[in-house]
Image 1: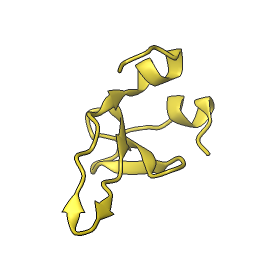
Image 2 (image 1 turned 120 degrees about the vertical axis):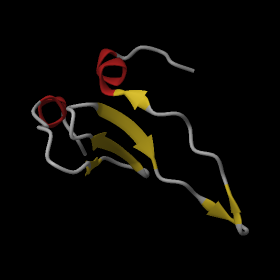
Image 3 (image 1 turned 45 degrees about the vertical axis):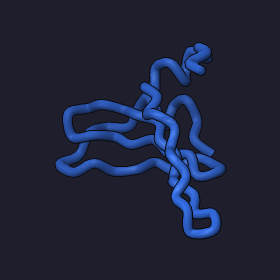
Image 4 (image 1 turned 180 degrees about the vertical axis):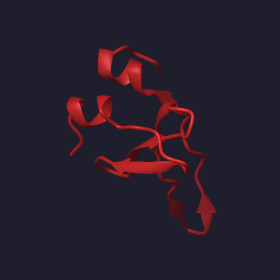
Length: 67
């Protein structure tokens, strides 16, 4: 489980990397310092379900409703 402190202290690296949370949710940290919440795609009966759009980390931390 990711904590607020881990998300805020995540530093950019030369390549993008993931910080895994729970239920296929992860934080993607980009080389330019961007932090986006993403979700792994699911495979159900050979059909790939669409992933929800990326959510900026600051909206998740503030608890804003995005949907």
